[in-house]
Amino acid sequence: MDYTLAQRLGFLTTLDHLLDKHRPGIEAALAADFRKPAFEVLTSETAVVRQEIRTLRAAAPGFLRERGAGLPLTLWPGRARVVREPRGRVLVLSPWNYPFQLALVPTADAVAAGNTVVLKPSELAPATAAVLADLAARAFPSDLVTVLQGGPETGAELLKQPWGLIFFTGSSATGKVVARAAAETLSPVVLELGGKNPAVVLEGADFETAARRIVWGKVLNAGQTCVAPDYTLVPRARVDDFTAACGRALKAFFPAGAGSDYAAIIHERAFDRLAALVEPHRVALGGGRDRERLFFEPTVMTGVTWDDAVMAQEIFGPILPVLPHDGADDARAQILRAPDPLAVYAFGPAAEARRFVASVPAGGGIVNDVMTHFIHDRLPFGGLHASGTGQYHGRWSLETFTRPRGRLEQPRSWDWPFRYPPYGGLKAKLVEFLLH
Image (cartoon, rainbow, N blue to C red; front, side, top):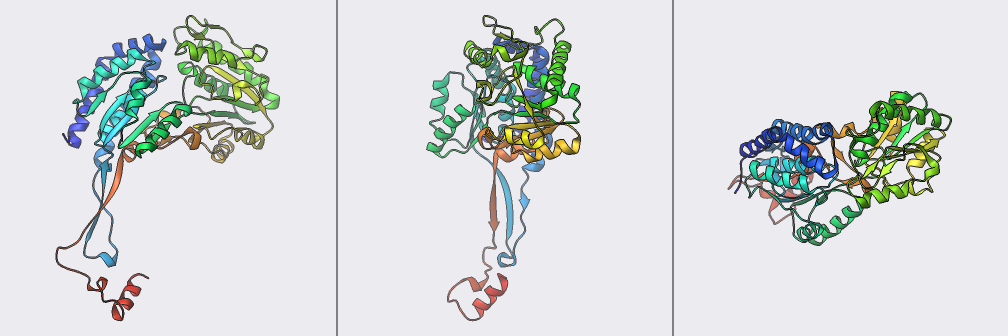
């Protein structure tokens, strides 16, 4: 059935209350899946969803309202309107790294916009997927939101169907598979991918602050974040200074070593891939790991070049290569060796860092910080080219999950006679006058 906007926002309010009520169970599920710390569950999972719901409740009534479009003289005395219509049936394919918020934020967005949703959570976070299914059943009617659990074969079957919109978050490799499948049914897609996000430290930067914030981006969720800084470019003469600052930051974060405040790697395959990227003779800090516990110590590598394996792919883990640069132009040239990233981060005097961010093609950018643009609900979030297509969050989500439809109304009996044949003479002169 069709639900009114008031009803849909009511369902989202119910979900908001459930997130508060079931917080211990949510934290337990994420701890079971990959030992995610409870503080990170709060700040990067449930709080993000709840903020999005509050934003949708405030923005949806105004954004979804029918609007006038004005009228040229040639169409007078009609009436032109623009209405925002839902896309219809939306498929949300969510990933394992932030399995809660990257499932529920687009689901909430789609519901607020008037769509029905099929949510396929990642099978790699099964405890969280079970909680998602339970919460969705409590918050939404089954004909509005359905959660389908299963492995890759479930996702493949879903992609064979036509959809009003497919919303996918994950790797670039899988994003290509989704895009190819969507092309077969001509289903529109939003792809939220990743990439090698650079963090550039310019001359004049506060090195202690830059190191602390960049290292934080690498240890949050054990670096398994699409907007994490992938590598750092530092002035050639200051590489040792920056590395030492990273060591101080890690000691402050984990005085007894990374433990309860640090997530695990998701599975053995991801662990082995990360381990293969570490060249022991280039490890400046960290490097410890335990495959049985899927523990991978935050690791800083120096002496790295673009020919090394760690620079040939998105790292997606707690490894930070530090490369030297010889000024802003050289840093920019190095960044352009890789496909357009999801984000670019620059540290330094505000005006200089701002110019640098503006000069590098990327999905988003931050001056003197990393990753925090993701939680700003008034900023559009999305990638560029290889790092994704489409945007969401807040009002931008309402735009993504609806389509504008033009509607023109004319009186039943009154006509402009000049549009009908026979043409020529005065009619042609009048039309020429009106169209110039």
